[in-house]
Image (cartoon, rainbow over all chains, first blue to last red; front, side, top):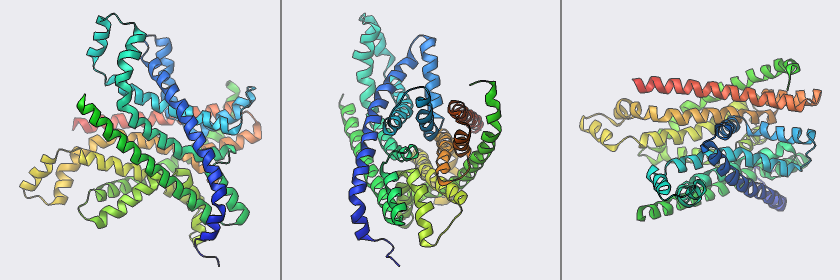
Length: 223
Length: 214
């Protein structure tokens, strides 16, 4: 009988897992970039004075937030090609991650925007600034920095959701460990290593977010 | 999507029943876990604090799907072979319980310290103060985040389809390979999940209003 946890086997599969980690990180980074940009657009659209824009934006945010990411991923994976859009599984999955978390980011931005005192907007109106200048020059510079830690938390959450990409055939960390497991009949080492990797990386990221939060609070106190 | 999608509904609804059973089972199991771990993390004794903190950080720090796979593939190698359904419910409960513990901890810590001091001055024990003074004030603050967690749990149940449990997502996949009507199937499924989430949101709002009134 093999030892419970075979370190030499674990060492042997480390390079393959490292390669898969690169895919996981790539999906997380690109997905998050998409989420922060699209989320901001959704938040702004939701605040737009035209119901034709604000209602659909609100619906999209609520709908995306209350349905499973896995089903959204399947939807894109199977329906886009049926509509003639051919994307690689990795791109499709990253798109799904970005869309899903854009809805969460939109809510984060909304909270940040709502926390900007009304007087700031009134002052901008008094100075005859256009709606665009008010948004980009007055409201957003005050709304976004305080919510950066909250966005950071969603970065960590997205990272932990990347294993779902395995369901649409992307060979990220979890899929790689399953491939190793089914080839060698040893699941303990690959799956435990993957779990440990997620734990270490997300704890480190959460620690970074907390530090950032404290630093922002210090700036907030000085301002 | 059109009227012809109706024939897809019965199999999906059968799956939805399984999804709801898993959601309810995991939620019922997660609730005591969350309360126990959340209060243990606030305990003065490191013997209670440390195991609770480890549990919470491990389950919040690793991915839910990785946890499912670990329990499904690795535990049997140690001689603990559980049916997929048990693994699904237990792992989802452990996962939600860890997030719930943070909700409990946050809400209890948000109760002003003067409340505890006043209870102490009235010669209440710590347990009495917790039960009669702190928790009644903390529970209303727990409800909104708990409602969000319940919706997260509902969404997470889709993951159990990947360990062969025939929930709605699993049935959707079966239907897809049988009929290839992907847009209808996945569109319908998203709508059904959304409908359940709306019901949960509504129920939590009602509960909040009742708790506030008291």
